[in-house]
View (spheres, rainbow, N blue to C red):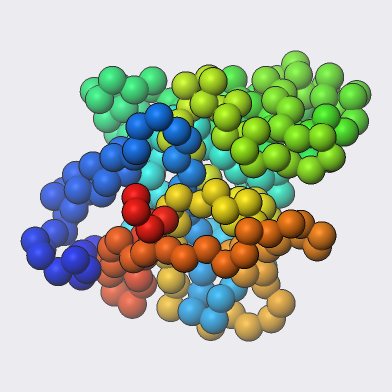
Length: 253
């Protein structure tokens, strides 16, 4: 894997990893920084047979781990947890070692977003979690589900009937979680995009034509108030074979 933009200095291997970690950790102080990571086919599909993992590669997974290393919290939608089979351990031993060497907690917690709380407390993502997870929901979520999940996670309310992105970011900030790394899915990205709260977007472009009716990486629910299209600036392009890795930032960051 090599960096092709910016072209200078030429970077690959461990030197590239160090530069990427430096970029990931360099966020503006004093507010929440929301980054998303997705993979997409060249014709815009976010999944193959319902899973994004089938679009990725070993290099894609390597970058995935680098992004997790610097996160204060890993934010993910409930459907993505179920579809991708999230377990308890999210970081490799190397990633955990790096975090401790750089003054970070060994592991960032996972925060699962769900409006209906259709989550089984017996899922491995809860029972095998080395750090107590969070479940983000709304005040209108079923009380019995909130109580059941409260036994395996900290249940956080962010909004009345729909997710309030600003309230979510603020609540995580009170817990010292300012670098918010999100792994989707499309509905979660669509919700943050509609609220104008995407600071960073990393997209792996997989050299596959998928066709069919797979979702795009951002899916805004009907009736959601939107801030409109959000302009982004290209920060880097990495290349591995025919696969591209793009990083975009909110202008001015």
